[in-house]
Amino acid sequence: MDDAIELMTEHDIEPVARLRMAAFFDGSGRTLDEDIAGLHGLLTNDDGLEVSLVARVDGELAGTVLLVRDELDAAHEVTPWLAGLVVGPAFRGRGIGAALVRAVEAHGCAQGVETLHLYTWEARRFYASLGWRSVERFEEDDGPMMLMSRRLPYNLPAR
Image 1 (tube, rainbow, N blue to C red):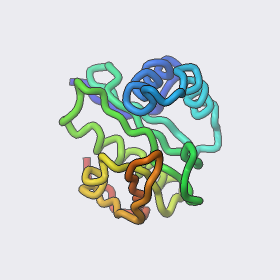
Image 2: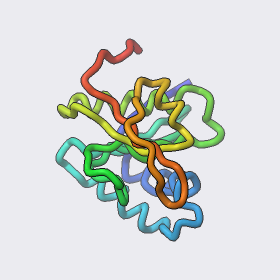
Image 3: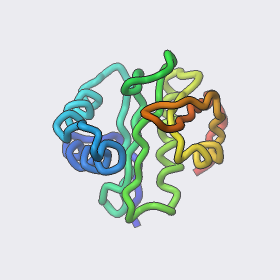
């Protein structure tokens, strides 16, 4: 089996955007073209901090995660953000999500990031199991949301 986590390439942008649209933006008004444009911006950003990572299993796109300065419509004035973690349905339950989180944490640590932040509600237990702490519960778009954070650097688990 050939598994890898690597930087998103130009070839990945549309499949990543389709995966993200299905997971996050169905019925939101956000278009595929808007998400493609946002991902392309990450690909062309050369400051080293912002990044889009992809997980592949046997060469097939299995999941993705972002490290970004600004979260879309952020309700809090903190930065940077782990955002957009999604694993394709056929690949769930294999540890790919946790591996993507660890990879983006390691990238942030290498860039000198002290604390990462994220928003979630459904996945708060998943992130807590990876050492993220709940900071604040709040309401957004008529539903509950949790601001979570993770202090870096830390000892990365051996691979």
